[in-house]
Each structure stands twice: as structure tokens, then as C-alpha cells.
Length: 473
Ligand SMILES: Cc1cc2nc3c(=O)[nH]c(=O)nc-3n(C[C@H](O)[C@H](O)[C@H](O)COP(=O)(O)OP(=O)(O)OC[C@H]3O[C@@H](n4cnc5c(N)ncnc54)[C@H](O)[C@@H]3O)c2cc1C
Image (tube, rainbow, N blue to C red; front, side):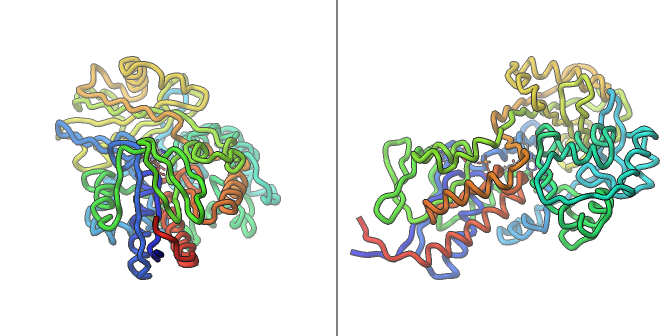
């Protein structure tokens, strides 16, 4: 007996896996291709790193709290899910950098840690006059070819000098990419630069050219979230997966070929046969699923960093200094453990009761991951000391939530794009109906995960259309 029905298994129910399931469901319907979609999630809940907690009048994001919606990727999906009205922009954003234990405003026009507007940069107190003078050499020196990947830190140091790198670029980019800036890949972190460097002289002009191009939207600078937090987005996705079989608390342990299909072994001793698989887990889990270890060996070169978020609630009267910002990042030249902090209630409506302050701090710099191993009380103490020194907070917090993310932040080190290309190439050659998605590969933000999920769904649908009918067992 034969059947034309295809089965696609998605491994991982974070934002990548859920989005892939949604687009597969949509495309199978429009192509009228009978398709069974199964999503398998190891934990008891969907959302992966996205987790919003609402309690005692606070709305706390344990993991990610917002996103810059490059090219409106999330907005388009939000519209399909009928939650576009819940998509909200931050109330205000004023970013600061802590240098030598003092907070300095990030000058207007800074993009990805690179100044693009000279007047605000030259009048800022973040960089000394000699540092500013050094940065202007960028206009005079030829840029050279950017064909090969290189260290992002060294490139910026060469173009703009060490002070701009240490006080501006490093704290702002390491906050997002969570790596040692000297190890980070220029091509993976700022992929657009090589195109814009062809027509511009210097790094500042190249970045400016990018911000004026159609690839860049002004919205890209502004943060978005959802009313009720990022879990609103997750819940909306799950709600719309009406044609998808959702399995929770089951882990995929192995994938192997079985006749013309793929056999997925699960940790509950059962198995699932599928025609195609989208793996939406971390790359280390993806590697562990195959007996053929050489297939994804290249991914060994992608280090994972460990961080923790610490949400603390205070009464407004506990904040002594007149810090007016919404966010600050901490340059590595400070004797501080926190790497960044956001005054959540200043940025997002409804995240704290009136008269209260909700701060979300980050710890876990590359080389200082051991701090994440401290007890919750130990972490709270360190974070409170730092907040006291930087923004004058006194007394104990009314609420503290510590969340550890172990080996959760992939670092895009030099050679990243090539590493990912080779891994996908070898896997897809051996398994043409498997795709890898998630923040290890082509972008670490939520919109970039959504984009990868959409592309993988399109590719898998194409592969399915070309498959022969299979025998029902
Ligand atoms: C602390 C922190 C803050 C961040 N802040 C931001 C931010 O503000 N903005 C932003 O855009 N991005 C941010 N990010 C990045 C963003 O959270 C991630 O890129 C995104 O959530 C990754 O989604 P994902 O679905 O690819 O992976 P995950 O969310 O990790 O989901 C993977 C899922 O796979 C499941 N799984 C694992 N193994 C198996 C298995 N064997 N079988 C079945 N299921 C399995 C896991 O349980 C998990 O649910 C942050 C990340 C962290 C850690």
C-alpha cells in the first residue's frame, strides 16, 4: 500500500522550530500537499530561551526581552498570527556605556558600535580628544580589501584606534554577540560592510553608506516586544499550529536513514519515521544526533558562552543617582562583573507597578563564566554591589530572579561563515531532506532565527515535492 502523504519532523520547540512548523503548515496547505508535521520538544514547555514570567505586578523576561525587527520579519509573522496589534515599540531608548565606573551616553548615530555622525561623536565624553583624533584617521587611510575573514576587534582598532574599540564598539557588540571582540568574525558580525566598503572610504563611511541603503531600515534601531512580553508571540504561534502534532517532554536522541526515510529515535524508547527533518536545537545537540560524527565536525569550532540574567525589583526611592538612561553596557576595562543592564520599566509599559523599578542585569563575560556558577544569593550580592557603584542603588531588592543559560550563546568567531557553510554542505549532501536552523548558524537574534525557519520550510517543501511515494508500514 502506498501513500503520498509526507511527514516532516521538527526537533526543538523554540522560536526557530515553532516558526518552521507554522510556515510548513501554511505552505503544505497552499501547495495542497498532504503533509503531517510533528514537532518534538524536549522540555515541558514551548518557547526555548524565550520565557516571560508575570507575577506580583511585574512582567519579567528571563531570556531575550526584545528584538530589532530587521526587514520587518517578525512584524510580517505577527500579522499572520493576528497579534500585530500587540507588537509594541520601546517607550524610549537611551543607551550608556560604563567606562572607568562612570556612565557615558552613547552618541547619536552610533551603529553596531561604529560612529556614523561626526558632530555627536566629537562632542561626546565617551572618548578622549586624542581618541577622537585617532578615529578621524579612518577618513585618510585606504581601507584595503575585505575579501578574507578577519578579527572584528583588530579591524576596528586599526581603523578607529584602541579607545573607540574599548569604550564603544567592544561593549556594544559584545553585549549582543557575547564574545571576545578580538576573536569575533568581521564577516559574520558585520556582513554588509564588505559591500559598502567598495564604494566608501573608511569604516565610518562604509557604516554610514549601509545605514542609508535599502537594506537598512530605521526601525532596525528600535526595539520591539509584545504586549504581555515575548511569550505572547510564542503562544500565538502554538495557537495557530492547528495541523501540527505537538509533542512535549520527549527528546530526540538519534537520526538515521531507514530505507527511503529517516528514523528518529526518542528517549521514551519509541521512534518516528519522517521524510524530512528540521533540526532547531543548539548545534551541539544537532551534532549528537548523528552516528557519523564527521558530518558536523566543523561545528566544534563554534564556542558556546554561558551567561545569566538577573532581574531585580526595587522601590524608586532606592535609586540615589540621577541615571536617566534605559540601558547600559559595561566596557571590559572596569572592575565590574555585570556586563549590561536594562531599566525594563523605563523601556516597556506595564513591566513594573507604579513607583517600582525593574532592572535586568547580565553576567558572564568570556573568561568570567565562573561567576554564573555562584549560588543565586552569591550572584545577587555581586550584581547589587555593581548596581550600587554605577547607579547608586541602596538596600535589598523586593524580588530577584536569576536565570542561568549554560552554553547558550554561540560565538561567531573568525571563519564562522565558512564553518557553517561546510557543515551544512556535508550534512545536506548525506541527508538532502534535513535542514539546520537556529542561532548558531546565520544570525543570533530572534528575527534572524525566524528568517532561517522560513527559508528552511521553503526548502523542505521543495524537497518533499520531488520525493517518490512511500510504502506505509
Ligand atoms: C540570555 C539571553 C538573552 C537574549 N536576548 C536576546 C534579545 O534580547 N533579542 C534577541 O533577538 N535575541 C536574544 N537572544 C537570542 C535568542 O534568545 C535566541 O536566538 C533564540 O531564542 C533562539 O531560538 P531557537 O528556537 O533557535 O533555540 P532555543 O530557544 O534554544 O530552542 C531550542 C529548543 O530545542 C529543544 N531541544 C533541545 N534538544 C532537544 C532534543 N534532543 N529533542 C527535542 N527538543 C530539543 C530545547 O528544549 C529548546 O526548547 C538572547 C539569548 C539569551 C540566552
